[in-house]
Length: 60
Picture 1 (spheres, one colour):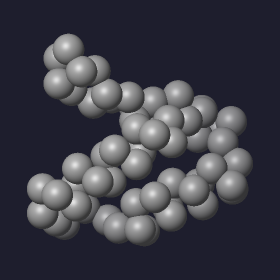
Picture 2 (tube, rainbow, N blue to C red):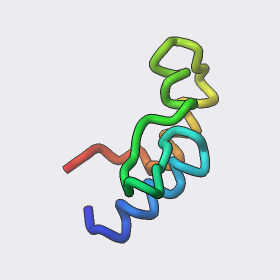
Picture 3 (spheres, helix red, strand yellow):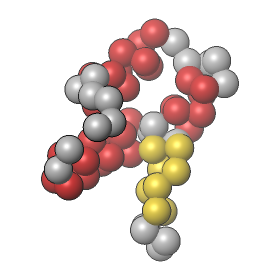
Picture 4 (cartoon, rainbow, N blue to C red):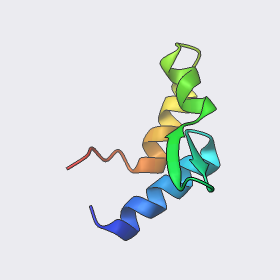
């Protein structure tokens, strides 16, 4: 995956709450939506949204 594609996916995940971006440190961490899914509080709609945002891609 090239850098541009990775950045676009990260930005979409940030907007959806699955990833949190710390601008001061220039780092990323799991966001509240991802933590809810991990804790079992997520539903099929959130998982479907995550899949749609990432295009169903798996890391290379």
